[in-house]
Length: 316
Image 1: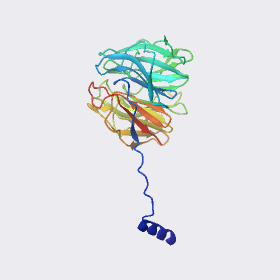
Image 2: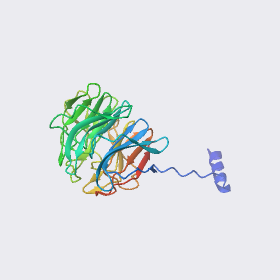
Image 3: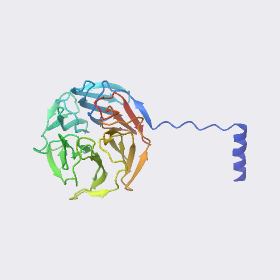
Image 4: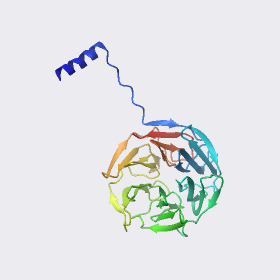
């Protein structure tokens, strides 16, 4: 032990030790969007980041679908969506892209029409619409083929407690147990054992009622169970599941966009604070691609000022 300590002292005194390189920042800048976008649908389709619809810089609601090849950092266009909405419930499964409802116009009227862009990616095809009276956008979206789950959501200024399950194989909808209270813009995930997790959200479509609850619905359960609450009450965070961690980045609460990033460890029922985003970011979603978490577009403030930038978190 003494010999080792002496060697360390001598190396330091002689200047022979090599300083450790600076660690790479957890958040970096990714490729900019072809056009700034706010309240778009965001998902991962294979190795591509998909950004669909939303407000453009003129506050026009567009139906453009952009795809970033994360291997080359090059953007391309997919066929335009059949509808121009915001707050899309967008998902990808089995090489296909699913558009399962959203909010129409600047009055945010819920529209339950649904479509699929199959693996040939040549045209969108209509699917069974959401059940009448349960139409929604701004839901927590979770994929576990053959099912896609829509947790909560909004109809105009009203948040929803209902939970829908779309069966890809049968093109049909089912209803799961309601949440204990309504919420739009929640973070959500599904665990290996089929348990659904929902965290946070907004009691209305705006940010005046941020929620901190974390809830779990085990498979075949008849009601949601309380878990450790989020340290930062909010809705609209960009979220994705990395192993045992549900990461929630940015979002909004009480009229402000947030930069805070937190991770829920479902195995230990604990929350951890991670490195914050470089700047606050709300009005967007996120997508997991390999070990990277992409958060494109959105806005730095609760204003109609869409961003074209992308933040990327590398998850160890």
